[in-house]
Amino acid sequence: MMRSLFSGVAGLKTHQTRMDVIGNNIANVNTVGYKAAQMTFQDTISQTMQNASGPSEASGRAGVNAKQIGLGVSTATIYNNITTGGAAETTGNPFDVRLNGDSFFIVNDGGNKYYTRAGAFNVDMAGTLCMQSNGYTVQGYGTTKDADGNLIVDTSAPKDLKIMTAENMVSAPEATTKHYLTGIIDSNTASLNSEKGHGVNVEIYDAEGYSYTVKYKLQSVKDGDGKAQQGQFKLTVSDVVDSTGTSIYTTKQTSAQTDSAYATAKETAFTTLLLGAAGGKTLTFDNTSGKVTGPHDITGKTTVDASDASKDAGFELDVTGIAAGTDTNIKKIDAFTKKVEVDISTVQNINNNKSSTINGSRGETDSTAGAGWKVGNLSGISIGVDGRITGSYTNGQTKLLGQIATA
Image (cartoon, rainbow, N blue to C red; front, side, top):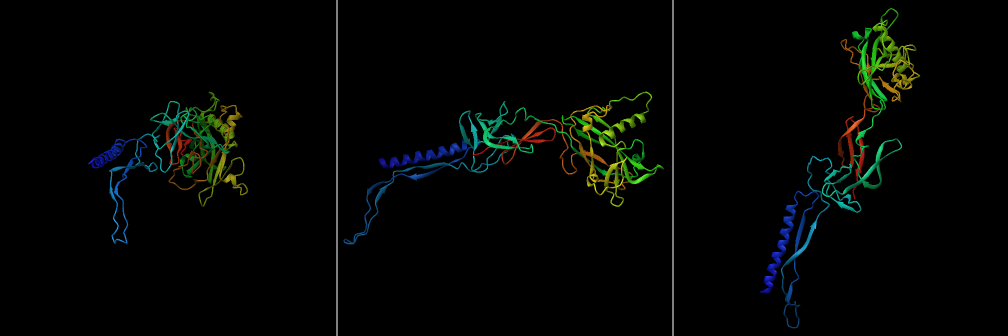
């Protein structure tokens, strides 16, 4: 009687444990990083009433099994499969991270390191990535610069990830070193044969992030009789203005100076300083393909020099002359430290119904390399599948801020 009562109670108690495990799983259905537990049963040691006996050859009797009475059931194991990832869930928080695989986040309470699968992170007032639940700081790798000055992950030792520091809140400006002219020049465009010419504007940045607009003027090259030369166009710089639209040409127009004379003086000053030739450049095109074959100084040769291939791809805008202050009529701007390479390889001279579409942009024709940019403020943060943390800025740039470490 006592054994039966004991077995029944053992069953009730063990099944209560199973219900406790199930209830705990249900209670933690929304707990970050929680791994469901599973329980298995085992029977308890049985009480032997009579031992087993083997068959007897002498008596001819067969053997009998032992007489055993079980004493109920007990808990065998309660285990958690901690390496299996849970279901992905969108939270709207860019700092919430989910591990995929048998690894752990490393966190620190200020003196001790712990390991966790819970990736509900946030950033504290000091800009440090930390756990939302207890404030433990997330460990990871900072950044350093390689030999070329590019930011790379510094994997020397895990440390607190200070991702929203004063340095990371802004993206430093960079000067424009490349821009290009592209599109179509149609010889029949009326503006090409006018005194005002056809305008092409290109925005550039200096090393401090201030923007300036270089205003090019394109006109047909004419012979002594005033006839336009086929496939040749004169390129000069009519003005350079700052972000407010104010010209950096400091000399004011006198009352005795006509508008045309003043514009010519300004154009001569800018063209000589920036293009290195008082008359500007000629864009020479192949009459068959309509593609540019070379820009050359108007005061120099006007035919393609096969021995100098660099002149066939573009020219340089010498904005360092502004920094040097070599022309007293033009405002000195020390932040222009490098020349600007100008690519014109994609400009075409073809019939486009009397419409020229030539325009200019910063960077290269197929990338933003050398485009330059103004200072930018941190506008967003993203974490990649490799744990790398990247900041996005209002100037269109991105910057590596660090990488979350795993164990």
